[in-house]
Image (tube, rainbow, N blue to C red):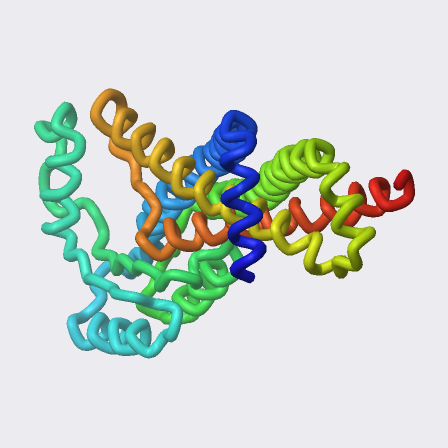
Length: 286
């Protein structure tokens, strides 16, 4: 391992420009990957914020007594999908309507709005089927006259979330593949520059792993350094967008560390694939 690390340092000293170019290329490749990750993270957060607004409203039969309302609230409280529920009296509904529709407040007189119960569902229970099931159970109560939850809106939101998740997975895989290809290309240049040295090492009995290890470490280290630079660039971009345009969310510390580690893994993978292919070519030609 010490010899391998020494070889990596010697390679950097021999061709510092090539090493800097390789790290910069990897950094910008991972930076593009990080930017996509930031966009996906903020889109997911925006969809989660919208999902938090998903609610079911059960309008009660006129003249429902307090005891019946209490019975309904107890039944709703026993539903495992429900996060919280609140009773809205006719007077409270009227006050809310006047506040939200100020242009019509003069024509809103008396308690002409029905009482209702508003439900918010737990995270993970906001898909169309679960919302539909909760609405169906509410409709079975005799106190409930009508249940509304914006069925089309909920289904559309769920489709958008699934589509965003699929697009994120596909594009993430594409960016990862591009990173591996770029890292492999930089390692290939290092191998081609040291072809004569590799031939000599092979003639004196060096094992395959002994020859490969410096390049694997080289790729992993370049991936780690590129990952650090990519995270720094992504943080700067996120800060600039937040100050200039809109509030954005950055990665959590654990996600930052995971991203840097991913850079090292991608570097190692790219090196492994490139070293195996091009060393076989060098040995075949020698």
